[in-house]
Length: 72
Image (cartoon, rainbow, N blue to C red; front, side, top):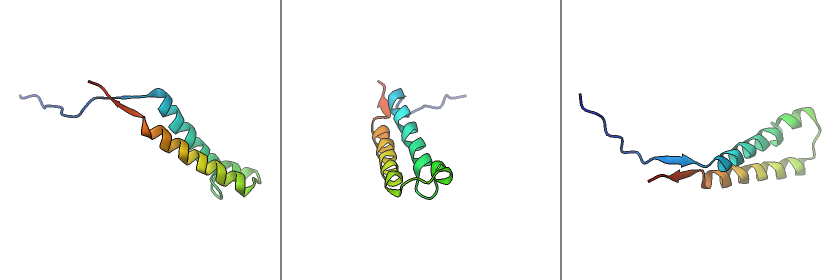
């Protein structure tokens, strides 16, 4: 039986970037205007909600930029 060749490059995941992505996703889930968990419980200012949503999206994008690193 022939062994299958694995042509995929090996990658390492940077732990700090993973935490940044998770933090951004949590901020999005908590503060999303109209859908966020904190908006359902508290009466938050829409400016705060939108600013936190934009900050969460920026954190997710910034975290994904350097998440994977090629291993030789």
